[in-house]
Image 1 (cartoon, rainbow, N blue to C red):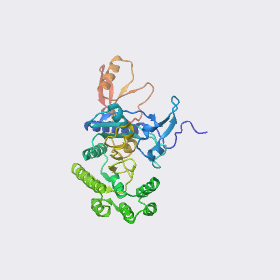
Image 2 (cartoon, rainbow, N blue to C red):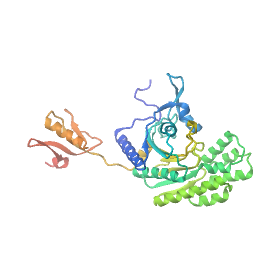
Image 3 (tube, one colour):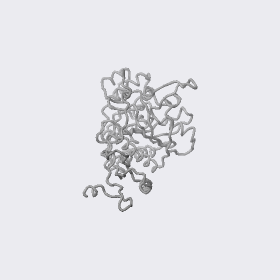
Image 4 (tube, rainbow, N blue to C red):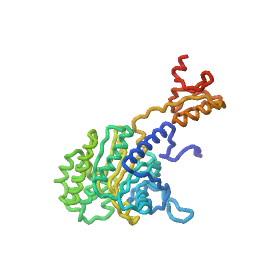
Length: 393
């Protein structure tokens, strides 16, 4: 018989110190998003399945917990990503004509973990810009993601840029079954040359050569130079390369310490993204801390196919690599019925101080707070005194 306190695999409680750090990061990121003009939304955790999976591809379908609604008999899903919900809100609830900036922060649930140490219950923070098709929105999304990670004291940062249109341009005009395309995408993602050649066995030699070249196109600025000669001279490919160069130039100007790289075989979310995309890495993490890009088709199922770009990250993962935060200082106070004591404690708390009342029969214990002061009675008045000074008497 399993112990009642055991949790499912890849599901864990968040204990006080870590929870405090996550909450600090949540507030910092939401404040940063607000400084950019983003509005906070809080979509429900549970929705009709077809709404949650709109335009997201097979990968998100496999990640989504599904159940039957006992009221309507329809299939429901527990969200595995909040972006489709933000698109629904933009399309049907706000229905604005101009640019809409939305941000959110809440739990998502995954049927399977992304890695051995990954959680199946990420705390997802994200930001979406709807209504602007230009690169200015792509740049703003990347800058907000970088600013948020910088606010978490993650340094140095590395951003890898890619574009879904590169592969689409390479395969333009090539007749291909969806299963074969998926095999090519999988091989490119794994950078598996043998699997890639098997997947494109029936394609013409120029297409096979271009696909093989994608596997080598990762690194610095030399990648874009090589791509212009190694890939087909098609407008879709040319535009993607030009726009990646534009983004890199502006990001370097805004963040001189940022390392910018390119990975044209990065196929993460290929069925989802429609243009440029990025992944941001930081010291202490082998996985991307934030991922984002352009996904203009996300609102199509809602009848309003607006340009869209954004990013998301997991605050639990970010807290693991974020810089340390100082332990909050607090005031230690005795518990008592003296009205003057109780009034003094209330005033301190109203002024934003943390006051730990020592409940009767308990000695001071180690806490997640640094009690550097105490409330003591001197000559009939309750006053604050430094604990270090008190210990010296």
